[in-house]
Length: 291
Image (cartoon, rainbow, N blue to C red; front, side, top):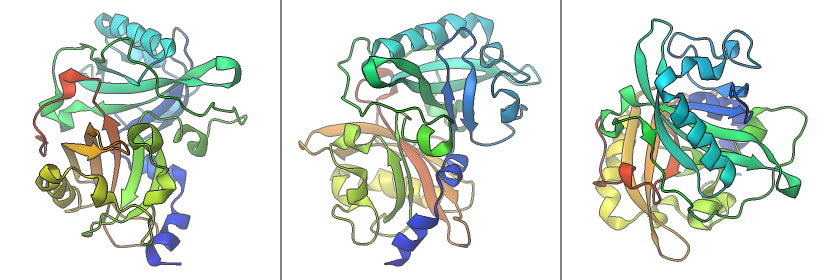
């Protein structure tokens, strides 16, 4: 077993979610968006994340600016209707009352019998990415055909291992080397590119990560790796293109940060890949975005 493979076995889903540069969540599809799972930088916007779980001290809906609640409701309605992951800009209020723009990407979690179990998604603080800021609203094109996904099975607890597989993006940890060696990855890579996630992992990977990068975007990819790899917690965002199994180009946003895995002093790149092929408002030049 190679070094990367040994490290992969030591990377827990809890650690991976905690070190992603955004909030990950699973919530009920109810009026309050009752949170059953939250992970990410803590505290965030002055709040303790645990205070939102099961509506302990705050409702998720109460942190959203009142004038943006209609956007969030339309977002949830579209997610429940099916199709690709839904993306919106909304504003939340910090504990000091400051409005902060969030990019919300979520999708319905569908169980057996096509039952909607809830919503899984991520929230990205756009103060870190001014280039993606803009007017609040629903950004996704409507009525995009769904990509088939495995039906989710409730395990009795909403833990990190269950939630990370329901998120509308691919989560990853990779080494800052010439091969972008994947140490751990979870989530929707098959929906994004058509390849099993396991084919990319480790030094003996069947598919090398660099081989699915569109060659013209090598500079942008190198730039976000260099920035994120420059320090623990250093964030970087890039817009690049990946090549799927059918040789189609998939425009994606990569949100990344430098992170040190347990028991290591090596700074690796921890991040998430969001498909924006159905979101014209988030498309543009393929480059490192302003941070």
